[in-house]
Length: 418
Image: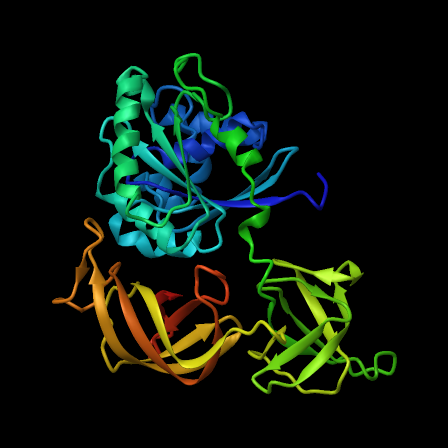
């Protein structure tokens, strides 16, 4: 497997029991990404539980309590590869109370798979997941219409569900939607083409995942480099070395480029770009590198290196679409929280909740502005120091924040900057 293979991150979402775990098990098994002994193990467990055939869902339900209850509780990350691409799957639970996990698992995904049970069609959870996928600006959405074997592989049923979903998605900001009829249980159109859906002309799910164009999903225009830490080896060999390490959050950085340092506003040039594999001529997202600059300016964690003529918004007032996570306490107006943005941390106060979003109708609820767990709303925040932000639709890294409760240290919300 070559190192420079493209990496595709995808997330799976659906409601309970519509076959997400089985689908992932099927992808792994049919693409030969699991080992015989793993297969034999789940074969034994399936037999012991008196199930017909091999329950591929057991492959992904790795947590013991899940295996006992048969549900997916937390975000489980799975890694696999084919000769064409490497994949990371964030398998997120379907229960309504776990929307937070979907937000966590999906925030960096290129593709979201939304599962629909062909018998039930578009349900509230489907709409919720589609809204979150659109809020999180996941570039590609694949609607897997599953359990086609239970509706006799009916083309009519498939078209009906597709039409239903499209009518709803028309109100959302989703750029690229693709539909595939599958049976995760039997393997139809997952990795192998189905003989049962002669009417379907499109690709299998695996073919889609291997070939969907993701190179332009990253922002290569706006150069953003949040400093994570300062590297100063105190030894004679590297006596004068001072590098700024971090992950490129956007744009291209080339040796010799003129750059601006925030918050100071000083300008200088990039002297050198170091990486784990040696010196580079240029760096782009999502590479982790160390930048060295020509002049002797001091930067620290949370500062940002950008282009002179392309700067982020620098402000203490931020407006976000926020998904509230906390089970115990709702979001309070005038409430104080710790805010984290790229490598920067500050304190903040909630100035105003503008409205709450109704997940089903997409209407703005201006009457009830209390955000409880899983609610999504538009919120204005004031921070103790300026943050260097972009709109989330431009840059998913510099456009996102999280709030942390100062007492419990729990992450209580994630927000997309408007």
